[in-house]
Amino acid sequence: MRAHLPLAALTGVAVAFLPGCGGDKGDGDAGARAAKELAGAPTFHCVDQATKQDLPATFPSDFPLPPGSVVIGSERRDQGQVIVYAVSPKDVKTTLHSLQHDLPAAGYKLTEGEVETDDAESNWTGNGYRGRWAIRVIDGCGGNTSVTVLAQKH
Image 1 (cartoon, helix red, strand yellow):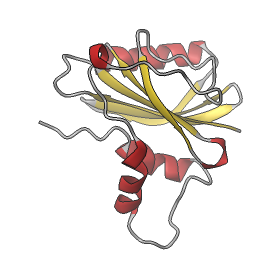
Image 2 (tube, rainbow, N blue to C red; image 1 turned 90 degrees about the vertical axis):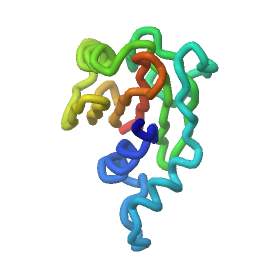
Image 3 (cartoon, rainbow, N blue to C red; image 1 turned 30 degrees about the vertical axis):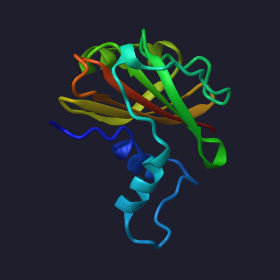
């Protein structure tokens, strides 16, 4: 069974993508920095066990999370960045299709990203924001998918 770290890939890419997010400050160990940043990330449970949280006011109100998603947490970062954690009741393929279709329909442009069997991620920009989303299979949840979105006004 694959270990599920909800933000590991997203954190490393976000550090490179968004200014003021960290980056190499001479401590030499990007893995240690990423693990340290994960300390506040919630544990992703199956959608039927998720406790719904409100979206933070600083998150773009028109950002289309996949249908049926339950927001399970959020955190603020430096320079106005916010991370939202959610669980989609759909499998990775369906959740990916939703993001690839609904974001452009809402005025967001998807830029560089990648898709693999159990996960996908992409940078995005639009409506006065930029950021990155990542989705991953939640092991043992019958097709549920974790959704992590980093957003920052620009």
